Length: 592
Image 1 (cartoon, rainbow, N blue to C red):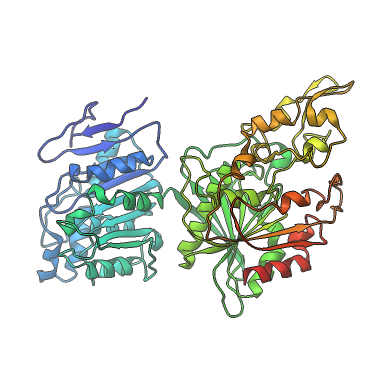
Image 2 (image 1 turned 90 degrees about the vertical axis):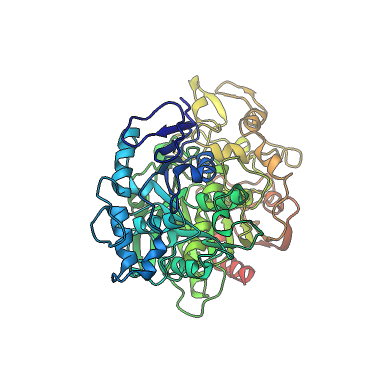
């Protein structure tokens, strides 16, 4: 059921129709069809009504938030604390209004009418859960300080401050709190009569001095009323940017020694759901399964592995390693350590499902880059992508090639190195079909083997290998296949196959569309390919020059309209291309 607007009267049951009264009612907005599981609580400024933030709140609903615009005691302006004779007047002012404790000389608010009391009551009436880690609080003016104070006493998903706080110098700002300091963000106007410099200093204190262009935005636009302008629709794109930062949460961090750690990130967007897993596709590395909390994690989860601070002089930007299929971040430890010794901060990803949809993994790459930038303060990163990860990285770096629910490309990639990538697509499985489906982690191209229905193991966007279905491309014009039935379809005594054209349809001709869409022009792209087909224990690709898995022609095909600054072929197989000393020396050189 879809309900886009509901008004909740204080002390009354929720009503089905919107109610707008001159003073008093809370307002709740939501759209069940867009819900991402997050709740936005909005707090207006002095003498405001919940409807004053309606434009902002409706924008949040468009992004999937449920919204509760809370009415609370706001008749006393917060700047009165500057003239109060009471010590720590700001601290007591926030404490009494937010928690209902009788500590302030300026206001009288009991527990039931405090922000926490009214919030709890309203959520109970709405039958919405009060999970602080899924709540973002936005406040305007006086409300921005209350929002930030809530972040001190509860582990909020995030805090958005508009035209405030006005509490610069207050003791509570620097007090340790429950919300990650990096999850405080703000929008100010430099002409605000409450003094944007003071407001910015308060935000800087909350963030422990770690500011970035995305965390604190100070507008210089021409407006009629600077203080009120930040809650007007002209700042809609900025609101979207601020709200969008909290779709992803860091759920946990596990230390791995020498300053390294593994974080579990979770994206709240409903498009990142639970995939099908075969036993061979489960997370097998103990520390990885432990950090995910399961061997079959949902695609909303991602592990970000940090190798620890460099031992010597640091060089920038950070490096993010994007893994290929069948492996997790631990596979790339030697490369990460090699780059770390050269002064780089190195982060490696483990995707929840290593054969997942490339759009889903590109979104998780976007999430990882945003987290790396948040932690490091860097404006850009360098990407080193391997195998299937090359397509994932290319999707993220191609602004016009994405699903509507995905994060827009942020211009945050300096260099992109594609190592052994199926950049022109692959037809490997149709050339060299596997019979041992279920034992190995590869798709089957036959739909029937010796009378047994195997269609569930074929490439399909809703099956076990959505990412592989998207990688399919025909190379038979250059390299005629030996197995005609598996490639073109048909039946024989033991096998029956639909052929590669059916797989192309199943994958929605993904590679053809990607290769017709220009990559971001400012990115410096490198191509690294191998020409030795001797991957141990593997049916190596020998119909044409390859690294054992990826045809050389495919690996050397650049993204559409790419600025290719280096193209190299090494005498390496698909594994040596990323783990061999010769290849790692080349990777290091490209990133300098």
